[in-house]
Amino acid sequence: MGFGRMGKSIALGLSKAGIDRRSIAVYDALPEALEEALKLGFKVCESASLATRHANVVIIAVKPGDVEKAVKSFAEDLSGKVVVSVAALVKLETLEKLIPKASVYRAMPNIAVEVNKGFTALAPAERRNEIVEKVFGALGEVVWVDEKALDMLTFFSASTPAAVAELYDAFLLSALRAGLPYHIAKKALAAVFRGVGALVEVKDVSNVRDSVITPRGVTIRIIEKLYTYGVKQRLLKALKDAYEEYEKVLGS
Ligand SMILES: NC(=O)c1ccc[n+]([C@@H]2O[C@H](COP(=O)([O-])OP(=O)(O)OC[C@H]3O[C@@H](n4cnc5c(N)ncnc54)[C@H](OP(=O)(O)O)[C@@H]3O)[C@@H](O)[C@H]2O)c1
Image 1 (cartoon, rainbow, N blue to C red):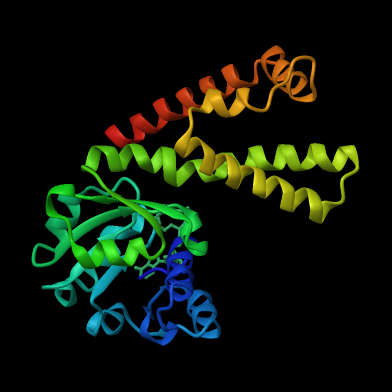
Image 2: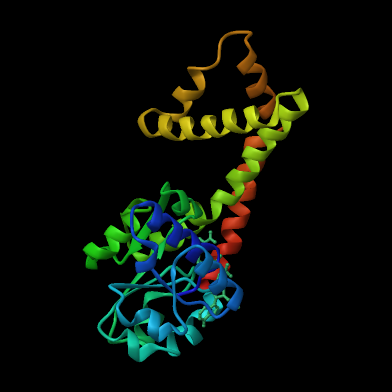
């Protein structure tokens, strides 16, 4: 339920994982979203109740502020169902009060689920559910955590793709400034981000950096400039400040 940016990304990722689009039932309050879902070949339903009727798992993908109203509107239909909310900030306790007869989970995916390279935190870890894990596992990596960690991962995994896209863009613009053709720069830098992502899983990050630097070489000039301009310190401060603001919203 909710075929916005996240709902659509989940649906597309599931379809890429081999699930027939006609077996993914979609409902959204916005007619334009339903039209798009129809064009893409998903099973569009006239109401949330209808979308839920034959569902093994119901995913709630509306904005946090819309969750209560949305869930209340078809709470009876959710009895006995496995319901997963991807909404940031909305606690399990709140969801359980709204739909006490459902088996309720929270998931915090990131936008890369659309290309099956996502990372999804699932909670609560003490009540793991095979089918929930299977659905989100089809979209990338999953980890079962407690709700506190899920709320932290909302910042570090679900939101940071926007910041990483900004970093990527800075590299892309500098490559274009240097004169590299757009399609080559785009491909090369995407490969760099992908490759470093894979390397830091098996090596220390400083090891990755030091395996590229040679004395008086090209790389040390880049690294030196980053330190001279305080890029890393400023980035750390920006993330710290943003996290503190997020914690205030989380606590309120
Ligand atoms: N975007 C991300 O990267 C991301 C990552 C992790 C988690 N999330 C979570 O995913 C949820 C959705 O985010 P989003 O970025 O996809 O937002 P979005 O693009 O605004 O999509 C939400 C959709 O739900 C629809 N909707 C609202 N109330 C509804 C109702 N009662 N019944 C059915 N549909 C309803 C909205 O329609 P209207 O426009 O008419 O309201 C909109 O089309 C949020 O709770 C967010 O915290 C998002």
